[in-house]
Each structure stands twice: as structure tokens, then as C-alpha cells.
Image (cartoon, rainbow, N blue to C red; front, top):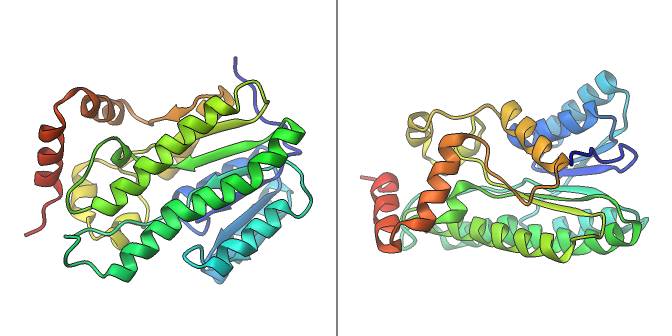
Amino acid sequence: MTARLDPSVPVLVTGASSGIGKEFARQFAARGHDVVVVARRVNRLEQVADELSRKHKVDVVPMAADLETDDGRAVIERHLTGKGTPWVLVNNAGFGLTGRVAKLDAARQNAEVQVNVVAVHQLTAAVIPQCVSGRAGGVINVGSTAAFQPIPFMATYAATKAFVLNYTEALAVELSGSGVRAMALCPGAVRTEFSEIAGNSAELEMAMPMSAEKCVRIALRAFDRNRTICIPGIANRVVATSAGVMPRVAVRHIAGLVFRRP
């Protein structure tokens, strides 16, 4: 059965200054939800908030926060729990690093874990009790098709997304019958700024990336249907499924060949 969430439930989107996060904010605002947009780049957030509030006649609040830090995560957690009411939380903020673990900066790898794992866990765990109490809202945790296999040369990134997938699947079972939804969005290549940060723009173009608009449109349709996992695109679903049936030794070596850098 398909059922949209009540638009009176507000939405908070992390990593909302561009790409998938900005598109989630736009499409939820178009549905009539008030939205809080979170990212580090204040100017971009203010532009997003101004554009969406004028176009869709909803409240869009920009909140600058660095989710790599304890203080940044605490600011958003306090906002989510301040009134004790349900939310839709979209944990979209995240980044990936490409290269050998031995050569990548250890501090940046740790920051990757803080944003991709710790922030997702902390904010989800904070908001879910009040969603259950109000029997409304839910969480969309943005993972990746990288979650379905180890990826040499993006080892930390793939591992963080495996956490997102497994955590969200388990949470969805716990929430069954509560009126609260939990979904892991696991896109393949999407045309955003992610590849510029990860340093794998060439691989992105080879993968024929999907637009952020299409990715989020598919995701919200799946969320309306209370799906637990959404993998947008037939090719991406094939990749994710094949990783589960092939021998793991083959999966990791194939992934290593794809992502190996000269």
C-alpha cells in the first residue's frame, strides 16, 4: 500500500547544500513539508532556504553544522529533540576518499567515519524514540551500492555504507507496526559533487550517472511504499544482487580492479 507521510511532519536533511540532499529538501518542500537544511556552507544553505521557501510557501530553516565534530552533531541533535515531536530525518551527509589506506591521511579517514557512521547513528538514535511515541515520521539513511561489497581503494567508504545498510535494515524490523518508517537509499553513480571530493570522476562518467532529481524521486516513491531498501536503477540492482551471489574473493578482486589507481 502506498501512503505519503503527513506533510505536518517536518523534515531535516543533512548535506543539503547540493546534490542528493538539496534535491530531498526540494521534493519534500514541494510536498508541503517544512524543512531544515543542514550543511557546512552557510551561503549555499541560505540560498537553498530562500529558493524553496519562496517557491513552495513552506518554512525552510538553514542550519550550519560540521558533522565531523562532536559540537556539530550535538547542535543538530538538540534541534531534533527540542520539542520531542516526530521528524523525517534524511541522513544524507557523507563523503568518500579514494586511495590506499596506507597512503591516505588518517585524520581524513577518521572524519569519513564520523560523518558517514557516527552522525547517522547519533541523529537516528536521537529522533527515533519521539517518532515512535508520536507514531509518525521516520528516517532515510543514504547508503550506496558500495554497501554490498568490500571495495579496495575505497575501503573505508564501502565499510561505512555497509554499516548504514545493516543498521537501517535492522531498525526497520524493530519499527514494524509502529507507524515509523526506516529506509536505506543505496544509489549507484549520481551526478553530484561527491566524485570531485572522492577523486573518481572518471569512474563516475563510465558508470553513466543518474540525476539527483531522478534518484530522489524514486527514493520518495519507495519511502511512500514503506520499502526498507531502495536501489534506484535496474543496473544498480543487478550489481548489488550479483555481489551477494558471487564468491567474495571474486567480488573484492573485481572491485579492486575497477577502483585501482595507477
